[in-house]
Amino acid sequence: MPSIHIPRSWRLPERLVTPESVYLDRRRFLASLGIAGSGILLAGCARGDGGAVEDEAGQAASVTGGGGGSLADYPGAPGIALYPAARSPGFAVDRPLTQEKNTARYCNFYEFTSNKDVHRYVQDYKPYPWAVEVGGLCDNPKVWDLDALLGQFGLEERVYRHRCVEAWSMVVPWTGFAFAKLVRQSQPRNEARYVRFTSVLRPDELPGQKTQTWYEWPYYEGIRIDEALNELAFFTVGIYGHPLPKPNGAPWRLVLPWKYGYKGPKAVVRIEFVNEQPQTFWNDLQPGEYGFHSNVNPSRPHPRWSQASERVLDTGDRIPTQRYNGYEAQVASLYPGEDPY
Ligand SMILES: Nc1nc2c(c(=O)[nH]1)N[C@H]1C(S)=C(S)[C@@H](COP(=O)(O)O)O[C@H]1N2
Ligand SMILES: [Mo]
Picture 1 (tube, rainbow, N blue to C red):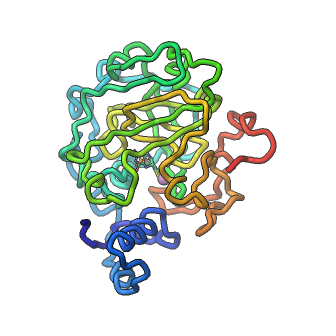
Picture 2 (cartoon, rainbow, N blue to C red):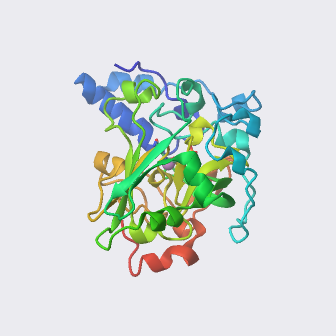
Picture 3 (tube, rainbow, N blue to C red):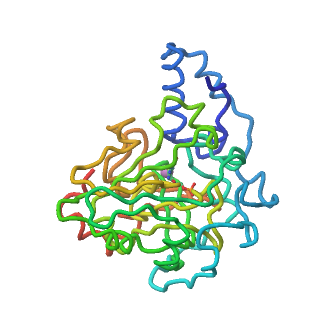
């Protein structure tokens, strides 16, 4: 049974919106106690003590925490021999990069915690070596060792915008490879219309999987195959020129920059080609709030807050949100007519 404590995120000034974490955790926690609707615990949750995300900036960093800055901090990381990866031109963003100390310490990775300070919970997680099973409706199914897979596909760096459904955003340099390479290598059959992803299930290493029993672990996601083949779909193993710190999804995570962040699963262990639209983690929890497509769309409000603008992680500035998160030219042809929910 989880203990009640004040979510760190609750104390931040941007709590003008209630993110899915706070809202759902509270409801499901209360439901698990059989006391849904109790006002006493709600009042307790609303107490704040003024903490801030910046309060740990500059702390020593390593793979066990958030924000290691050198390759030496990641011994044994898949693809480590391939760094540094050349930055690909053509993905420039008209905003400054987010400071690494913030991307490493303001994270969503519910397998550890639904608060943003994921780095406090990752010490038991062992992301290397890593195997991933690719299967389903394809002619070349395979269990890959991630290091060998990266050796085959190579690494490049791309700067992407990232927009969370909670209305905050960042700009980061990811290291990875175009997901289309792995899709083509796997030779999906004609009847394969979707790709389904499953994240890791290791309750002994990811403590949130033990304490937050109201979530359907492991995390699972899905996209259409034409989305998977879009050039922007990027499987990442690194950030800021080094392997991913655990809170950012070590050893690898999918990045789909035109969709809300939750469409990009971290720590993927299985990729399947399927012919029916897969169920997804957040859609199963709250179908009215988190659609299958979940393309960034400033004119479609979340039922509990506006998506018209976003808070920039470093500065706290509020800026307008762009259609498809600024990637309309690359992805609009996937969605003729209405942007599907
Ligand atoms: N397995 C898994 N993947 C996940 C999540 C998660 O909780 N578990 N959170 C998602 C959400 S909501 C976002 S915004 C991004 C956050 O990535 P970051 O912490 O590196 O910024 O990861 C996404 N991928
Ligand atoms: Mo998110």
